[in-house]
Amino acid sequence: SKIFLISAVVVFPFSRYLDRYGLYFIVLLPIFIWFGNAILLTLYFLTVDFFRQIFRVHFHPQRRLFLNKTLAYGGLLSTSGFQLYGYHRAYSFQVKQVAVPIKNLPLPFSGFRIAQFTDLHVGPFITKDFVERVVAQVNDLRPDLIAITGDLVDGSVDELRDHVAPLGKLKSSQGTFFVTGNHEFYSGADPWCEHLSSMGMIVLRNQMQSLQ
Image (cartoon, rainbow, N blue to C red; front, side, top):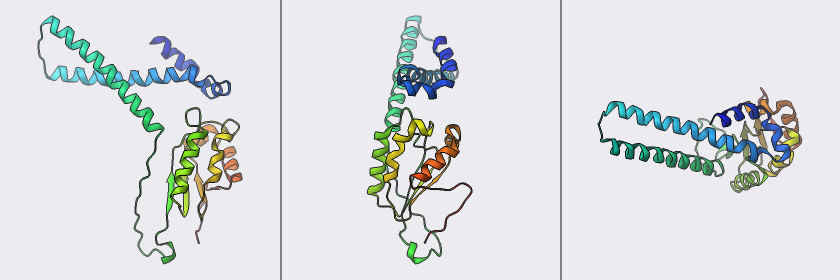
């Protein structure tokens, strides 16, 4: 475990460059899996110890050994299950429809539909294929306006240009609007805003846009 921890500290600052050489999944993914599992196991055993302190039951040594093994294997199975569920959730998405009543809304905007998505995090794990699925799903909704509300990318324009290209196929009558999140600033906010603008998006940075 010490080796994994030291590796994470040393390798993580250079993680952005690993993807250029196809090493991201080989080097960093096992560290992420181990780190996530370590956190879940820590929470699991802290919970177990908490209840042990509340319910102080004395067992025969053999029964205690059996119970400890059961709890240990149960911890591994449950945390692995959580990780698999998280992996599934990361690569799946659902459309949630929300009605927003607005008093005195002009009649032409009655039934106006906004498709909003956020935190796509295009990068080593979320790539072009997934982005294409998102674009197809959004276009099927036939929205009047599309809003992308930050944390779109995890990487530079040069690294992810091809992966975000499908976003240029988003369709709506009022256009696609984009605002930055903190990950855009990690990845280079100015180059990304310029690139997304060149793709036809309306990038808002401390700005407003009137709709007609």
